[in-house]
Length: 405
Image (cartoon, rainbow, N blue to C red; front, side, top):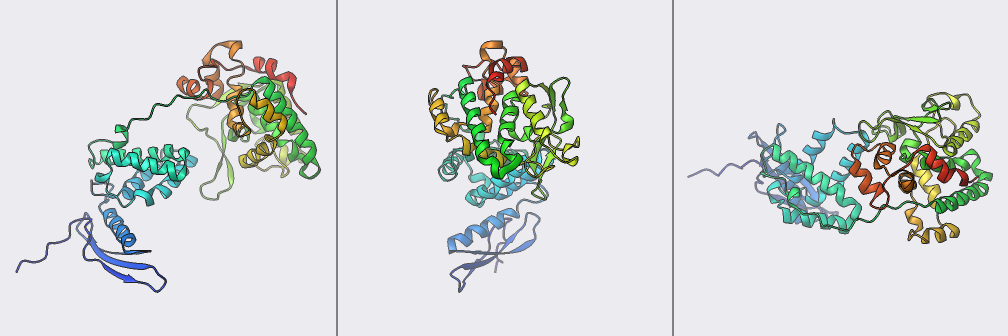
């Protein structure tokens, strides 16, 4: 009598399903690893179909051994392999985004095998992501899928990357949103009046939003880069700042820390600052009472807790509070903008677009924003209507005379 056929790697043996008193279901089964070893599997879920999917996912995971994927490996294994592959090559905040993406994407497709992820399936997955998590999550999902398939191609589990077979829908890209000089003036007035209202209970931190906004308008920096400016980064004689770090959440402690790296490599630079931005930095420094707060390595912009890093979330919250003012809403309407369009990133774009007529050289904008590729500046910041961005002199001419507070 012929013996039973041995389990193939990643294949499920007989499955024993046991209902639990809590309404859940437990299932047990055997599988075999790519190395030939038998492995016992166990899963708990809400239904038989649920636990079977979990067992299949576990079984396929054992096909991923010694860093090699096969076409029968699960997408959960492929995504995990991609994150592991990128861990030492990206910055901590980028790695956190990758891990978070895999956290919510893996339950959607993790039990499927790599071979099942044909382009049509990938397209449906991306549509499901847009429907359930919003358009903003699609880019993260596409990056994760493309990365996982890239690892699979390297391991010869796939012949090609299915994501690369998808055609991106061509959409007319709107001109990036930026504020006019008049809108900046109204925003400043609103922020200054907000300071008067909250100063009774906010102390020094009542001025923080204005200081950050002025520095962003004068430098085009990201908000996390503005909050990372230290006293030692400011050259008061030359009226310039050194941009060399950003604020991130520490991956281990979840506390805010200054990272001595920027978002992209090669972005460290000196920026000549207009007088209105330098005035904001000087006012912030003069408000500091303690010697510790004035130490060279301390943040140039601090809140009520002197010496502490300010969270970008607090600035965004304060900006949301100010942008609903009826005067600002009316001013924005003249160019088709709404309050939700007034974000820290809009201020960054504003610094890169207001002086279009004054210079006419897109490279000025590229250097100010720290972009490695001029196409990034043109597509996402300068657009077709704005060819250039300015210098300290031009920004002072445009914005220096309308500073609030």
